Every structure is written in structure tokens, then in C-alpha cells.
Amino acid sequence: MIIKRHKVLSPSFLKSKGVILEYDAYQDDKYGRILAYIWIDCMKELAQYCRPEHNRQMLVNEVLVKKNYAEHVIYSKRHRLKYESYFLK
Image (cartoon, rainbow, N blue to C red; front, side, top):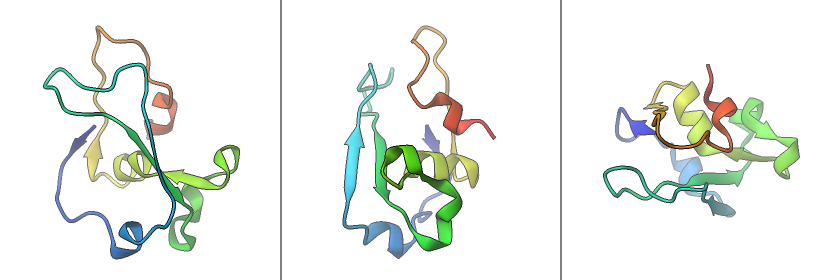
């Protein structure tokens, strides 16, 4: 995922009490940057992104892609990502 703009996270994102980082099969990209899925507690203003199958948490990466703040990048030589379907618009 490539972030397109800075200052995209609202203060309510940053105040989330429960943050979980989850790694896929690869923990870095071809440039050595660490890759992780970021799960936080659901927020009322973004309820459509809450995932019941993940204890009502939401995937920050998905929110950033779907709101066009980030771009989902697929590396052809790597396996399919665990949550790749979440990033489809």
C-alpha cells in the first residue's frame, strides 16, 4: 500500500485504544519497508468498515484505500495477500 497524502488519519483514529498489527506471509516490501495490517476498534463515523468476523474491528489499510488516501499495490512475484479482497473498490 502506498500512502498518497499525509495527514489522512483523523484524531479519532489516533486515539483508538485497541491497535493490532497483523503480518501476512511477507513482512516487508521490495524496498525493505515493513508491511502490516492495522486493526483498530470500530468507530461510529466509519461503521461501514467494521468487520463482524474480526470482533467488530476495522482494517485501517482498507479505509485508506477505499477513501483514496492510499493505493493498493500488487507484486506479481508474491503470493496473494490475506485480505486482498478487502482492498477492491
